[in-house]
Image 1 (cartoon, protein in one colour):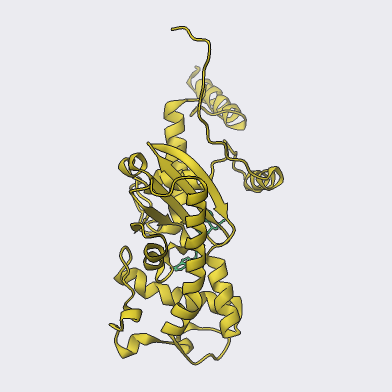
Image 2 (cartoon, protein in one colour):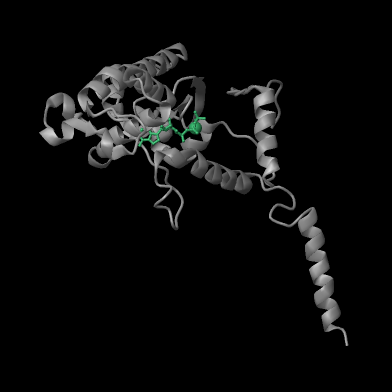
Length: 283
Ligand SMILES: Nc1ncnc2c1ncn2[C@@H]1O[C@H](COP(=O)(O)OP(=O)(O)OP(=O)(O)O)[C@@H](O)[C@H]1O
Ligand SMILES: [Mg+2]
């Protein structure tokens, strides 16, 4: 095959060099070698997206503590990515401001709000509070049961969810919508939004996503690993599981020379052990 011109369409993801170096240093200080850095949107895609979703066109949204990662997949590969500097911590901050409480207290209250909904209607949460379908008992939170420092008494769930969490969620989804539009993919993502990350468990999340963006929304746990996975079957672990799957895929596609073999100190130890064993065999 011959040619005079070779073209490629690439999507380049950059990061602040200092932040990346510090991250690598932290990992190395606990004794782990860093093989490479992977954008968390790509890592979580490995553990939560199906091939069909990627082919059709999908927006993977990883809502963490401080950031929301957006990764758009079209025709099977990543087409656009962005990081929005808002996440679950902002909802906690808003609750702390609204309740005049500490961040720790606000976090506990936030988790108690979502805990119930997560169990009842994780994927398709038609919010029962707004439709008034919940019993009297579930409309309030008794903060005395939450082991918090402040005395906040009984709080109305509706006030906390509709008045504090919902506006922040609406902002997050509005910014996601703007990013999709800016990238030129509005109307090109029939598989809709797949939401993961720790804050994916936030109460009312999928409903607000559907209302703001008018797209199908799926909240996803990581898949693709087996064993004792109960603990990690939670959206907060999508990146970690995705990194494992990504590393496995890369090592299959492009195995390093000597990958899997001990090197450095490990190699020296192995040679020493071999010599000791061989000496033991000598008469
Ligand atoms: N059940 C839940 N309901 C609501 N929010 C939750 C729940 N569990 C965890 N969170 C929130 O998820 C956030 C942490 O998510 P995650 O572990 O994905 O963050 P991270 O990856 O460390 O942060 P980042 O991606 O911003 O660097 C916190 O704000 C926490 O309050
Ligand atoms: Mg994250």
